[in-house]
Length: 633
Image 1 (cartoon, rainbow, N blue to C red):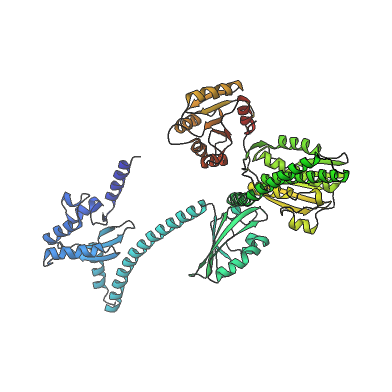
Image 2: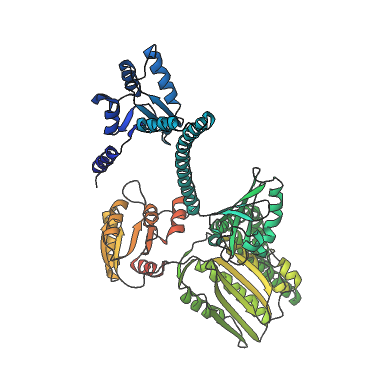
């Protein structure tokens, strides 16, 4: 039904009622009236048409004598307009010049203006007069009371109508407010002075899994659990004392990082609580802090390392000259020992350079099973015959975003430490588990003597070692550094049989393109597009092409058979390949990006957080492997 048809049906319905009805807007301009209004007051057509002014209608009736003797007409009209402009509920009765008695009942509208209903009560009034005349037994006081009561009832009905409309408006506003708060990706709640929840947007269990979905009426301890409440309690106490606060904590049950903001509510004596899941932000923040530490360490050690390297070069040169001279046998042994020590110093400089150098964390989609198989080969080659190595992967993860080089170095370092702890006999176990679908744990257990209290406390300190002169003290420091750079953490502990070192990394699953399919190639350079097309076809893929983000989005929407999107970051127009990846959102088809930008470019870094990135130039085999697991060959 069209809007015009709806309007016509509304007017037809209004014309069927016995009362006259008008609706004027906030400027006292007629919006709508029914036919009964024109008939009751015998008004010309221009005063009952939308757009007629209230003042003109009052002036017409006053000039005709409908209100009796009103004195100065313009002053009378101005007074009536002023009363009407107040937009207050009102009820009145008046006798017209023709002897008819009408009641006038007006109610303001929420949007401005008001609606008025006119009822001809002449017959009712005559019946009341007749009843009054025939009821001589009724005292004048009772009759007056009855009349006042009837008028009061009519006014009360008008007030109730206004209140019902106000209630309706408030109910709608509350519904909109609740819908808005429930869409916010945070838990918003209010705790009353009796330490019980009085309001919740019902998102507590999505922020902290394992908690109550709707905590209204519960205490914070019952809703959150003992661990989270123990952290919250001191901050909540200060908030009830009038002190707002913001803090973060790790929710043990879900392993999520939670930020909580507390705001006192002076009007009720309670506290408002805002809780947000900031796990990804905390991971990124930890990685950024570790990068800054690396930069500072590099600045502090670069000058010392340069001078120390020069000294070692001089020492090695002098010792080489001494080796060419005829010296006693005991002197030759001393020279050989000095050269060995200088070379160990050079190796130590290389380790420091690796630890403080500008190495970037470059996560790429990696086949976890294949990664662990390669790691098993590397670790097994370093172990004596009496030491067994086993990998237990119960994570259920197939492809994830990790830096395979960094992780391999870290796990190999932990495996070598475990080997040294076991001696010639023992067992090393690598357990891989997914924690709450947020973290990926790599736990290395050994059957050695375990960590001493001193090792547990200082294990990550640079140059700390329990291997005497055989150790550099930089192995665990490098593991700690690389793990923090990835936004994770390292945990040292003693297990049931020996020591345990756990790498906890952010779990970011990635889709993999395991079979040839239809690839959408987005590249604005025709020469480069031809080259990449040939590479894709040689790998068995079919190719469809686009040159801009808009064209690519249209093809992706129209062709569900597309199995993957390969796009350059720099494209025709203002939008980039990163914009394309963001616009695709939750589209299950994997997006792969290529670029010639350097890794330190902000756009390159932003793109690598959204999708796998392959740097140009590359060959067909590199591209094929990149599309298989998102990692350059």
